[in-house]
Length: 72
Image (cartoon, rainbow, N blue to C red; front, top):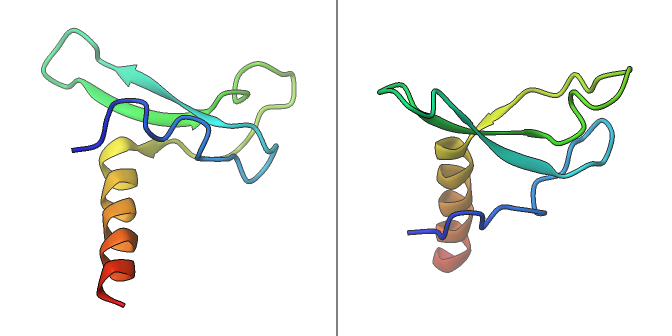
């Protein structure tokens, strides 16, 4: 299992070059979900149009790449 925060400063916005950061949606109910989005998405007048990413999808992609490297 990956440590929380493992992807900090590893996922970079393709539009502005800022790092993605984790955010929690629905923190107090059954729909709780960790997402990652550009840290500058809402901090400027001109906002990044990059989508948010679900943490589960990032982990899945990481393990697929890692496993393919091990196989080769």
